Length: 239
Image (cartoon, rainbow, N blue to C red; front, side, top):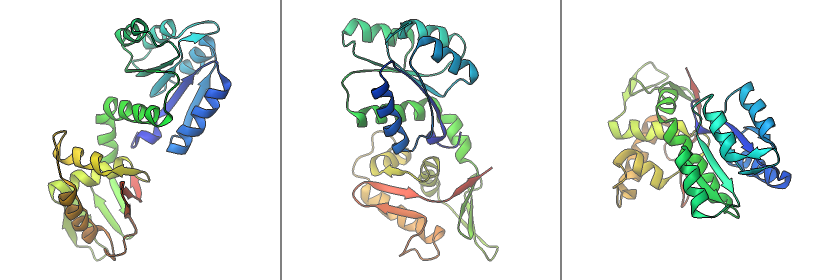
């Protein structure tokens, strides 16, 4: 998996309208490998076909409960899970987390909150795999970035070195290629969770990156600004 958007998601809920909405919202956010199940039996069959990267589980299901289903599936493969339930009692939430679930969200919920929780679980659990996926060859037009060597190969055969900060930024962008990476996410990737007031420094490093990646840095094709939000990298990653 080279990006969280390559993840296989398994959604288990007996409400067809909610399943449809979840699929629409997750697909719109960039996730395109989504399977659904409305019963414990269907979820077990889907899981046995191919374990997903993340399960989103309801608790009240027609042929069982999500807690028992989670225990059964986790015994087969160590897959992260997010409980999505109308049960809002502290005892239920603590029980689900105590079983080993990665998160618990009560209904009704904000869709944006669900998307953020899914994103954070995937980034945390698959951090090493994503880093390996990003450690590949990034093609940007006629320039090739060797992330392992921190070099940008130019069409004339020469190469430009990347600084440690430029490389960290580029890895984060490559992990999420084709999708917006917020200013905060980029700052945290480079300067850690205690970053503060890094936006000016970030903009300077992005400008330097563009000078190495873009044929016309003033009119970027690949490292694009999404005004007021962050940056997005277009390009192709190859092994």
